Amino acid sequence: MPELPEVEVIVRELKPELIGEIICGCEILWERTFVSERGTLPLNLIIHSISRKGKYIVMTLSKGALVVHLRMTGQLLISYSDLLDQEHVRLIFRLSSGKNLYFFDSRKFGRIYFVKNPEEIISKIGIDALDPSLSESKFFELLGKRQIRIKSFLLDQRFLSGLGNIYIDECLFKAGIHPETKVNFITRRKRKKLLSVINEVLVGAIQNMGTTISDYKTTGGGFGTNQKYLTVYDRENMPCLVCHDNVRKIRVNGRGTHFCPTCQPQVKEIR
Ligand SMILES: [Zn+2]
Image (tube, rainbow, N blue to C red):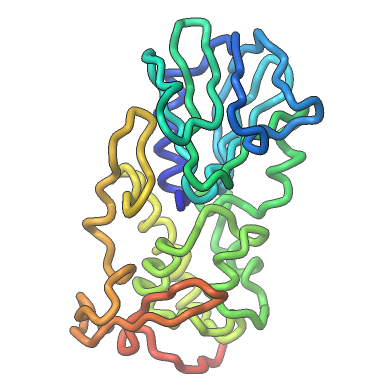
């Protein structure tokens, strides 16, 4: 499932390709992919800007906006060729320059919303994990004295948006925090460390064009390389890269969670 770095790479690729384009056709091949009041997109709208919050892509149009969530297997692909007969094409935007923007989605959970104001959707999620205004004090305030597990906290997009299963495991490993630690037991020092590793892990993954484990592809059909640099995710029973203890896999919130029992001890820390 694409997380913040993958979505950011896609946004950076889409910008030079799509800004200024007029959407002159919209073919919906799987009805549930496209969500709008009227069920259709008015034609000849211009794409003014493209941005991201958490895992959402926002395309501001001359009237209204398109908000895209890739969910598990959604892919945006730009091509001049006709790919209509390919498998899993759910929607096609025809653009004035002759390019096409395809939405592929094998599992069909991805959504493209057409809304008057993107805030209708993105105001429901918390601050973006790479938002420059996310200061230490703001992050500390967000964590507060919550009694939920840190992994559950980071998975819940209403607090902090953009992180998912892979990057959360990576961040907690690098911060030395057991994924089941309750937020209110995390020390100030560890909170500080966690914020800095979130930044480091996400920025590094963007530089590596994201992590391709199953479906993620860039808009030109390329793959990310960050999977080569993962330190704990998907390394069950393999030696920890730091201490050589065996990496364990448990379930937290129903999600497969990887951690090193030595580097991420389950201790109740006093704040
Ligand atoms: Zn270790």
